Length: 203
Image (tube, rainbow, N blue to C red; front, side, top):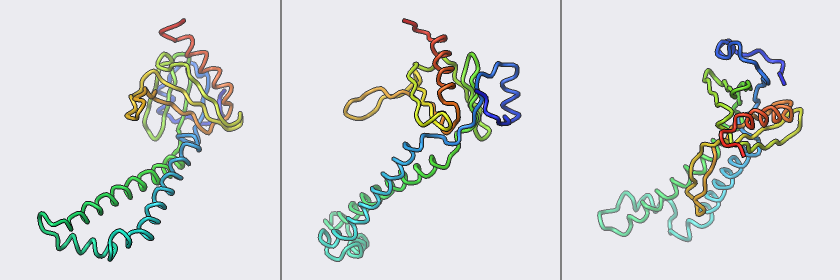
């Protein structure tokens, strides 16, 4: 599967005479659903904070934000009014979390995935001057395909990863997304074949 695209000179030089089994350009860095989740989460998070501050702040602190700021300026060591400072710090942290999720979602939604080239021995990626590659034996064989054959996403799990810090303390594999590309089913078959061939732990 070779999309009709012109590869950057650096990528052509890097690949040299390697056989190119597929060549595509990822229109997105991540699946649109993943980006939208972050975006919506950020909007809902900030919306809830706005609602809370608008309708409940007066009830919890007579005088509202102005009173809290006044407490901050007048607070002395050991004065219980210093709790207003802590309250403002908590609000700022929550706002920053919402802004981070919002802008992360927007950024990933607009970010391009770059060039992907599959060879018999590795998957090569090139994006904004950065060259990356992973040998096929670094993938664990778990592959997910979404979308349609004209424009879809391939999700490849790697053997490397990290532990989550949630209640389950589970292992989360690193992911490579080939997103917004044509011919996903043909590419998936090539990836699956090469991963199986290079599997360091065959059954």
